[in-house]
Image (cartoon, rainbow, N blue to C red; front, side, top):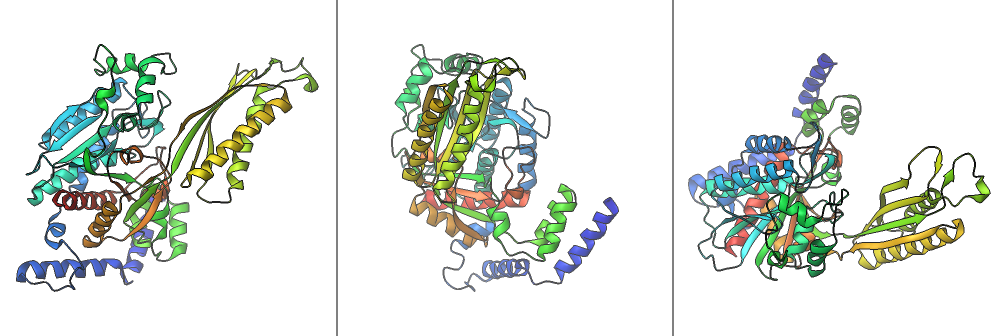
Length: 505
């Protein structure tokens, strides 16, 4: 197989080198830049490249960034290549320490708040102006990959290093934010850190009084074990940021979907299909760039509105053999029927943007020879249209009541855990991100994020935008999650240039 892959690699390379490609166009642009720098006169049409001097001076240490991502992935409670890094665990604390060290090495002033949001600041020449911020998260759901969130944190540190190497001096200060617990793994609350930064009083009170994990450890106990929440009054309002605290916030992130990888022009589609279907992952990655140009950058214009539901049914249970079918009140079947109802109601919206997922379905007592006496479901539904999503939630609740009546079980809980509105990216931020991609000669498209991110809540504090980079087959939340050093470098460059533009605005 290895010799066959080597032969195919050479053959595909020869074929692709005979084709006109975007590489020649990119080399032409680089030549133009070189001639402009040498002569001191513009050769391109006005506005073609914009801030050409800064754009051409941005140099990303892509291999160094990849090495840092690999090192961070070692702070995990799951064996490689999987990553499990849950809030306030020992591995999470070690990972935070690693990132704080990188921030310090980059010359940033590092601080933390009461729940462990971490900030690294580069003071500008006019530090009294509202700061431009960027960042993401490093916690990881069980058995996931090493790029989700991490690219937006370590990539942000590299973006600061890129700007410093270029000689850029910010007017507005630049700040990196590592958000606490974007994933809901431990306490069932997504984007915990950014929700608090956005001033959620309800969440702050719940974290003080009622929120516990699966082992009945309270949030405050867990936070203190990691060195946070040291205030005697357990007052978390110190985390809140005032609206306008930041001039803008930009998050770099892997797309977590296949659009950027799939939408570019494809050279020899049949070879692309063969390579991805019949050869190894490493072989496909090595020759992919010759088979498809893809798109380099996604400029996010909106983030879909997420909602989470918890549902529980209670029945009588009983022996799997002794209780005949007409006499059963099966909580498990009620849960199964509701799971299918979720799919039905989502599809009834007739919109591709409406999605629903039953991510958790648990049965009690969980024995093969016992009729389930309790069932627990956790449902995620999202849409870019808030009203349409809320209609789906209403239908799911109606179905839960109908199923309980029909199956003679008790609907003991139907709880809307969160029901957040969508967020729109700021027009100025979108403009600057698109300009940066153009000046860097990177292909890009405007797109919607259907996954939620900390940016959803940062939009309540400041103008917001997101930069997406491609990931292999759109994979995320699984060990196969992958973004190439080249794609990450492109994202870091766009982030660097966007931060620079906004800093000088």
